[in-house]
Length: 65
Image (cartoon, rainbow, N blue to C red):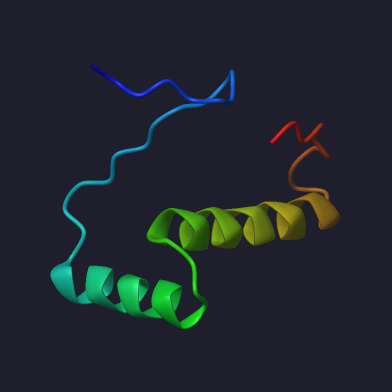
């Protein structure tokens, strides 16, 4: 039985064919920052989205997360 999330609107991302060497580096980087891989990747994505918003390449969104 799947877990129920406390957040109403969540999605899932599956990434296939990630080179093992790269995955190892991601794990190491996340560990160095004392984050989970999920937390590490979400932080990277959020930073990049903010950069694109500042450049006007993405609309400034209403962040409900």
